[in-house]
Image 1 (cartoon, rainbow, N blue to C red):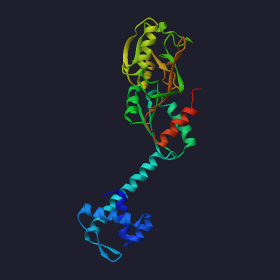
Image 2: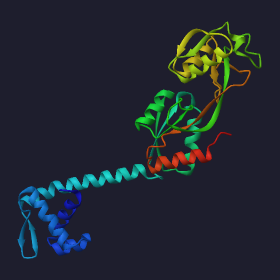
Image 3: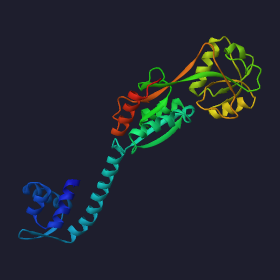
Image 4: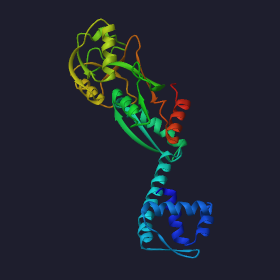
Amino acid sequence: MDVQTLRWFLSLCETENMRDTAAVEGVNQSTLSRALARLEADLGVELFHRHGRRLAVNRFGALLREHAARAVGELDVARRRVEALVDPDTGLVRLGFLHSVGRWLVPEVLRDYRAVTPGVRLELRQGFARELFAWLHAGDIDAALVTPPPEGDTARWHRLREQQLCIALPTDHPLAAVPRLTLRDVRGEPFVAFAPTTDLRRVIDKLCQDAGFEPVIAFESEEIATVRGLIGAGLGVGILPRPATMEHDDPAYRPLAPAQVRPIGLAWISLARPTAAAARFIGHLTRHAAAP
């Protein structure tokens, strides 16, 4: 019992004639006859009363018709929903992104893409770099706005932007007015740091190591907003990407010397077969949204 056979069966219920159904369905009459015979053999009952060339649905056929109509209808709905999801103009793109780019890069990317593909639907998921790459490999998201993949990871990655890394200080800190700072200038200060599970913490630890000291960690958090808030409240200094827009309670940001940047790009799994909607999104960003 397959979907095509059920469709032919429902058509036979309407026409009550093998020749007419064969014409409507565009199939050879003998093929249709064999399919009906297999269906009846599978169920162990006849589904029609035969009156010459006319086929009248019997009680078994009426019962099957009821359920077959629902089954075929549900499958048709499922097909339409799948087609809608993958349609490049109206389909679904599942995009993951880092917490630190949610307020600037994500709105920019989505606004630009919706301008050329207004009907596309986007499902957003926020996470840390390790989570984003795990979701990519698991097929839970189609693409991610994230830092470069860790060594050995098979994900593709295309650079889109760079974030300038700065020393962040309370606005009333004596060094807040200094135009440019080195990490050694703040080596004796308590640090508000990202948690060791974050990719930014690894970057910051390496910078401090290269500067010849190990920071004294006063507070740790996985949330960039929390780190910004604690520094702004005067509880320590830290290293943060310069935000695209400043808030009234933000700390002071002083560029690191020598300059340090954090690359942000689009990651996806090249071995996976993306939907047409996801493929168009990835293609658009890699062609038109390169780093300035």
